[in-house]
Amino acid sequence: MPQHMCDNGEVSTAIDSLPPPPRLAPQLVRTPAELHAALVGRIAAQHSSTVGLVPTMGYLHGGHAQLMRRARAENALLVVSIFVNPLQFGPGEDYASYPRDLEADMVLCRQEGVDIVFAPSVEAMYPRGFASRVTVAGVSDTLDGLARPGHFMGVATVVLKLFNLVQPTCAYFGEKDWQQLSVLRRMVADLSVPVKVVGVPTVRVAEGAAAGLALSSRNSYLSEAQRIRAAVLSRTLRAVQRAYAQGETTIARLLEAGQAVLASESELQLDYLSIVDEFMQPINQLDPAQITPDTPRLLIAARLFGVRLIDNMPLVPAPQVVHDSQTT
Image 1 (cartoon, rainbow, N blue to C red):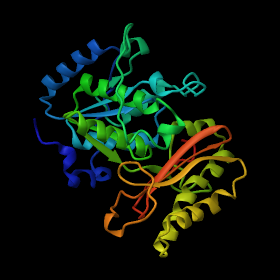
Image 2 (image 1 turned 60 degrees about the horizontal axis):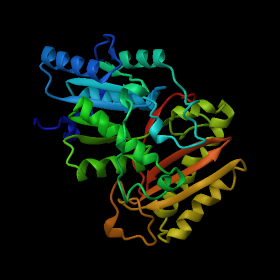
Image 3 (image 1 turned 135 degrees about the vertical axis):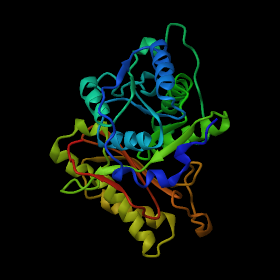
């Protein structure tokens, strides 16, 4: 197998300085058989040695575009999947109402130089008799694993199937869904899946009253005024980071710094605010020797105006990717 281009940090740091990708229309395929034929044809025609995959549920925004740019820079062939996966939605969640706009998604994919868009139906992904599920214990048992039973089983199942269908060299996921990223990395390691899972920094609103808000397809449920108030999640995480930078090391007091910010938003219903280790387990005491650029990690989930939002940051601040739109 060729070396993963996504192992080379020098490639990713220069993404924004690369020349624009080709603007040819992506090839849209709807079934696993069509996907296989498209991959075989493109790999043969382009002599492609590396394939990048960006799995999405569609309704694409600037965060997805950043994933595509990273994948485009690091691979000869770029595949984007668009599939609202019913297995990762629980009873009473927003599967039926989840925003969908394939036409707009195809426009963005073309702008970012995507080669193949795989947009299957539920029946194509889960034909009659489909009975398999993938469970990743440990990292999926806390936080969102408790709040959304079965969610990560659905995520792991669909992603492993996509890996088998596409057989990518590298797959790209946003760090905004940190627990999901941890689950998928664990799955790939445990099952010896020959795919490099690449986490890409969260894209945030750059300026204005909603500055700091993490981009999410679910932000479309919120009005402009509500998105401004939703930025309280990122402010909460920044407050914890500041408290740590100022010398606070007690977990309870660090969380209190965040909770003081949350108290300013009367409409917010907190699911959790937690500091976790690399295994997604809440920690009770900080060990300076174990602090890395990624962990411990601050995670938050809350409902605001009926919309469930998540966010996360490392305890030690790192540069964040920003976007100049407040509407995505």
